[in-house]
Length: 482
Image (cartoon, rainbow, N blue to C red; front, side, top):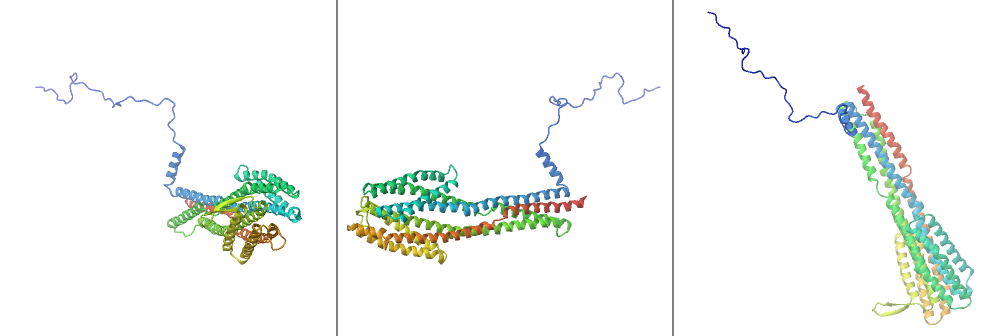
């Protein structure tokens, strides 16, 4: 009996269908990029970062990065050093050649105006007996004041407060001269109105012109202090970059030693040497300059300011002393005495006493600031002149109050044993002290400025050499990989 053949395959025509294989489909719609569209581009910075990262994975790449950073550090150190030293050298030069001379010129303007006022009052007291020397002194003071104003105008910024002050003084100076000439004319003719014109001229000088001249003096002093403030601070940014550059160079040489067992790399050693020279030059040179500038301020400018103030006080005192006799009690002031009682004083004599107190304090301060016998000697002499001046003034006031006007006049403007001699001696001694202190200032400030000479150019030059040394040193190592 024949058996049918067994098979595991399903017979044809069976009821089990065969499903075709379908690849998995995305859950959402797929948007294809438009035809011809370029892929998104990365920024140059991102690409540069990737390149640096790729370079840093190899020793040649790391060496290139180190060389570039070292060169950048050394160049930055030199550039900042040159920049800061250029600014400080310019400020030191302004101290020596611009702001301090202008400060002294402003003080001379004040002195010339005050002395002209004093000479005018002295000539008025002399009346028809005014000497040619007194008249010449007045004219010379006016000319000096005008010349000083021209110099101040030429060195002031157009819109600055100093320029405005100079403009005001230039406008008021001819007005003052006109009032003085009227006073002289009426005085010679014997008209009492001449005294009124002189008092009006003095008021214009004391209340308008001298305060403006004092403002000019103060503004120039402020400018001088600003120049000192710009010239003396340490260049911390340059010093910090110098230390950082040396640290980077030391690290690079240590790294080179660890990898090659070579002690020295000539290029890196040269770069280190140049950076060290610049840093030492910077620290030592600026320290010497700073010391010189500080000395010029402490032993020059401070003394000059005190002496100028003392001289101004003596000029004010002399002018008020003369006007005491011109006014003859026409101007009074009421003040309380030590007991609290109201007392009436002659206005000009009252101001004279205040000016003499200021003079005494100024001379005492000047004696303290004098650092050698040459500077102290004229100040001590001025103190002695001031004491005699006070004694003679007291005697003149006693004569005037007792009705002896002619005797009082001789004690003030006479040719012998008069207060005018004391004033001239005080002024002469203060002038000698000012000349000495000016020489000391110029020497100290000049030494400070000289210490900065060539530092800016030298720093820039050495920075270029140092950067070249760093690049050559790293290049020597790179050549070993070729």
